[in-house]
Length: 324
Ligand SMILES: Cc1cc2nc3c(=O)[nH]c(=O)nc-3n(C[C@H](O)[C@H](O)[C@H](O)COP(=O)(O)O)c2cc1C
Image 1 (cartoon, rainbow, N blue to C red):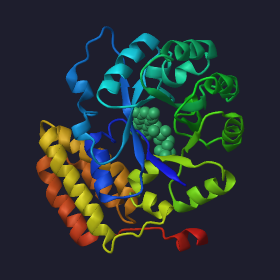
Image 2 (tube, rainbow, N blue to C red; image 1 turned 180 degrees about the horizontal axis):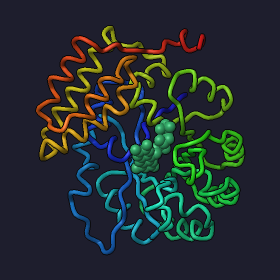
Image 3 (cartoon, helix red, strand yellow; image 1 turned 60 degrees about the vertical axis):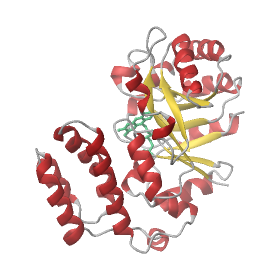
């Protein structure tokens, strides 16, 4: 059985995006939400949890994610999430950005196995189950080798591995040999994450790692929202372009209702198009035009024209990919 999850992308896969995505494009079984950070004390601004309120997350099961190096604060937030109905929370050990990692959070914790072990010990009595999303190290893949026995001592819902180093950010190749080593040595279910952009990518990886059942996809699905359907062999709609347009239009309407001010809405739609443009063979011109817009009033006509007159939807069929 193949379990597919939509990766968290902060600034993109918020509740509106992930639920709208799931209403238009089948194939994902769950998603991990972009990270929440912990805070001092026991009070949290309710706006911080809005994105995770059950009523805003009806269309796709979601696992909330926490970025923290403070186990006590993690427990407080995890308990709040448990009270909202979440039985599993995810710990972010992957965030590569220097602002985060330099403060010993996200991938910045990976060189410190003792801290990770102490953290896990402290949160062991929290009410919810834990999953972890990790890179293979901050500076060296030797780091994950030291961490595997520590992860193994803790019963995880899943260990999601993006086999890059923190210092790589998103550059360079994924390190499949190190992923293979982790897989071999993991007592917990392992999820693969990283650079699955086409069915051919998925086929190559699932052939090399037949024992992996859980796969997480981020950018590839935001570029080609039919990718989960292709992987799961779910029939595509008769009019794929109309489905993409309906998805876009609903995002635009829902963000318009939620975000205050045209510039926020425009910024959000620019972020959506940064990836969604990948669904079209001829979207370069559109992307340039969108980037140039500085008021939301110019946006609808541009997009309407694109979908009506220009959009060339490009779906790499399995056959085309095999030939590639
Ligand atoms: C803009 C952006 C935001 C991200 N935000 C998060 C996040 O909040 N939490 C997290 O664990 N990973 C985050 N990631 C990493 C992705 O979840 C994923 O691990 C990474 O993109 C590799 O998978 P992919 O090649 O399928 O996209 C982010 C990545 C990007 C590009």
